[in-house]
Length: 252
Image 1 (tube, one colour):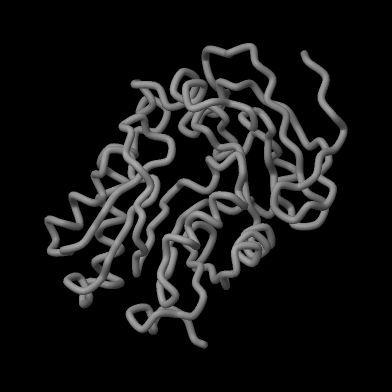
Image 2 (cartoon, rainbow, N blue to C red):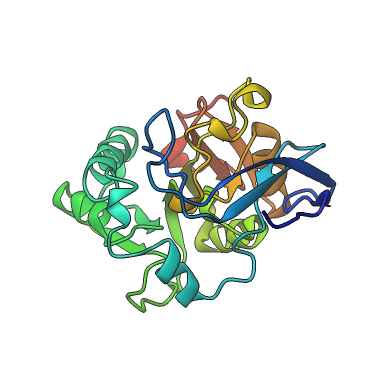
């Protein structure tokens, strides 16, 4: 097993992150309780920040787009994330309609990390008139939109970011001054020190290279100039000032 550094700078707050645990690259989210049946034989070391708690691996820091396509975002990726094609986009479209459906003809919406655009298609079918989709990990060659949006959705994407600050800055730049980022990523459980990388969400084969705490998410969005609020262990928002269409989400 290849040796690893004992510590690295945290990718969010810059403080010291110490070596936390190691797992096989084959770990995927929906693996059996006993672990993946076939191991890749690649050690993936994760570090945990002493200050904000971010849990991350440097595994993909120097990967090219071709590396990601060959090793993670392969044509059979849905084997490791069976909810990606329809179940998750359909549920997220229903959530957006429930929260913001009254503004469906006025909102400019971008689904960031939208894979094949299924969420966009569900929203179009539900009467949302201005919806775009962009995926930084897809191989379809689509360019990052050059305009801004009232609502930027980002479901199950931040945990894939090798450079969390760069992704947060990109998302902040895509939102209008009165816009908002609605995103999901699972925060670490209270017993992460017990579960360690047996936690089901610690899944390098899915591309989960940055696993957050509430403190790391708050610090991350602050670095991009945005405020942050959370609605439990997976759904969150980031914004400069809460937009009128989302006035009922939190008390200010």
